[in-house]
Image 1: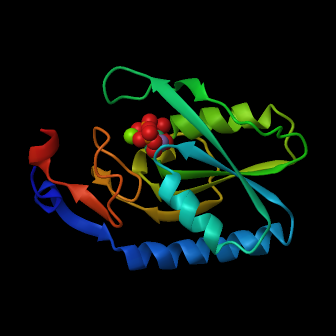
Image 2: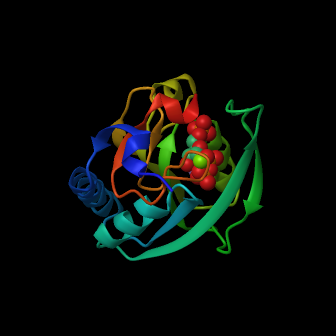
Length: 181
Ligand code: PRP
Ligand code: MN
Ligand code: MG
């Protein structure tokens, strides 16, 4: 009905920049896991693009599984109480688990998720997130692989939504205030 471009303020990362950064992260991950099998756990729905591109950039043997979680909270504020909407189909016992996320905002989702997955007896649990916002530093969470630390702006595209829109953009951009105000 209207042009998506007019909803955006500016481009934060182009598709080429994202692709390059993901290749760098994949090279680090390949080095660190050194031929061990990795179970990539994607967090629906935001992580689908990162998962698709990161998994294809890896040379290690990988399996993929998915979780959907929803954090209870008032409005936009995340409370840290998380509900599982879709659980993994994989038994984590003895597995090297790498959680794949699009963004860490408050950090509450990942902090809960990591504890939850660690309780299932995996060999290891690490996190790879393409974006990280400043607020995440308030939560004590060790994120091994981060694509970019970004300012506290409303970002969309490459999996990230606002009201379920803009996930399909092949770049990451900031939303124009008129869209959310
Ligand atoms: C977004 C994002 C992360 C989470 C980060 O997911 O994809 O999963 O919020 O927020 P936090 O660090 O403050 O916990 P959302 O709940 O919007 O679901 P979606 O992935 O389906 O968009
Ligand atoms: Mn998400
Ligand atoms: Mg969302």
